[in-house]
Amino acid sequence: MSPIIDRLALIGVGLIGGSIARAAREYGVVRSIVATARSEATRKRVVELGIADQVVATNAAAVKDADLVIVCIPVGASGPVAAEIAAALKPGAIVSDVGSVKSAVLKDMAPHVPKGVHLIPGHPVAGTENSGPDSGFSELFVNRWCILTPPDGADVEAVEKLRAFWSALGANVEVMTAEHHDMVLAITSHLPHLIAYTIVGTADELQTVTRSEVLKFSAGGFRDFTRIAASDPTMWRDVFLANKDAVLEMLGRFNEDVSALTKAIRKGDGDALFEHFKRTRAIRKGIVDIGQDSPAPDFGRPHPDLPHEPLPKPYASEKG
Ligand code: NAP
Image (tube, rainbow, N blue to C red; front, top):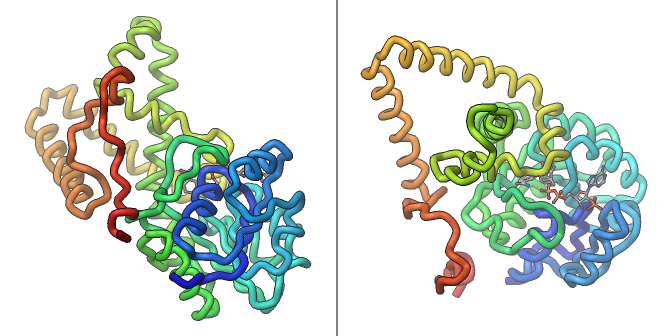
């Protein structure tokens, strides 16, 4: 493929920035990548990993001459970073981000972005519980959604260029308003994380069940919550602070539904429980049907001493 972007600048090289760098290079989406990170240790690691053509010490140096700048840091830091890079941005450049909340990012970044530079926030709805430059991998975005939230009056050509960029990384792209994004993600991602953080904390504080029993019998549902609850504390602190209203709205509805199920259990209302579980099972089937998860049974992690097949690389095989 001929490159879509000449010079890509990545500010922050963790799971998401590191995955963009690997994918953009592997699939020939950009001509060159310049990267920077807050700490010397991360910058050094990015050099060792060789996933960028150039690693520079400051955010301003990274964006100089870049055609596309993607800010890949916790959402609470996006405003100050936008202020820092503003004067160094090239006219006509696209500035985007990958933050899990969009209204707050738009509000924090927009005042700093100069005229003639196109701010188009984005959010790849793909991730793992791991952090840092080593955790990135090129297939992360394949067959996942990337949501773009251009502000009113955004340059159509710039939006299409960013859409082409994410499509070339393997993602499906959808465009919506930042407000709508925040409402959708509050229920599909933010609330589930809050529930996982809560339940793992609750289990940890139990007196009647020992911690070793919780770990030993974790396959009974708890294990999946622990994976989500291992997600980066800084990132998730910022998500809940930045998407407060939408999360509180969804949390209110959730609490009402928990109360209804609590009542059904207390009253021994098996029909109510059965009907509820039947409805939720259909939602799971819908997710598998549209290819957003696998129907394969989850037998847990492979035993280290047993041979097992390497994971398939769908994008590699699709691209031949
Ligand atoms: P990560 O692996 O922890 O990497 C974060 C990067 O941001 C690191 O390079 C870090 O630099 C830098 N950073 C942290 N605090 C900063 C600050 N105050 N100022 C400047 N740079 C800072 O995080 P990630 O998972 O890639 O997440 C990055 C963004 O992607 C977040 O906004 C998150 O909401 C969004 N996102 C995450 C996921 C996910 O599943 N993880 C999915 C979709 C979107 P140092 O290493 O030098 O500290």
